[in-house]
Image (cartoon, rainbow, N blue to C red):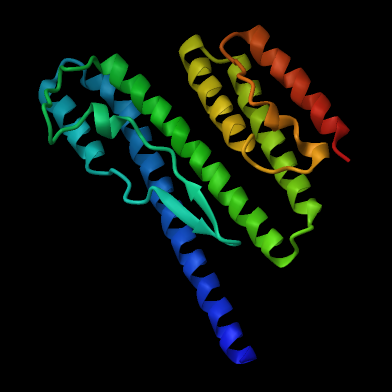
Length: 222
């Protein structure tokens, strides 16, 4: 009986690991494809055929995974990407239905979603694996909380010296991460994100406010 249980655990762990790796690799590849699109679409603004090619090349990359099974019977839902809805080359599509500036911004927001999905997927997989071994492990929560704060701090620092449009995208990424964190059942000492508040990095003053707040929060982690 013990051997059967051991085999089941090993098979289940292997399944989770494979699904996690496959989804992570797909997101990493998709992030790279979005980066290529973002860097190219404005350059093609006067070439309809080139715009069509870029749109079609990216539209073929629509991810097949919408959720990933993680240890402890947890499921992570990957953010849906709007590019594949609004720039649907298999539907009523024309290269000029949307300006290249709007397409670039849409792609940047989608890439921010991909980055958030990657960050959360990677760290939740680690957290849930730790909790599966020891459900009362608050150290795992502490490590996750600190990683999250440091990541948010890096976004705020980047936004501080970024142009307005880039700061807006960073602000979106910042809020998407906080939205994800607010759903995590952190212990009381790390329960800040349950407040579900909206934050802004759109201006240098707003970004500096978040830098100050997060720096103080990191100093208080025990």
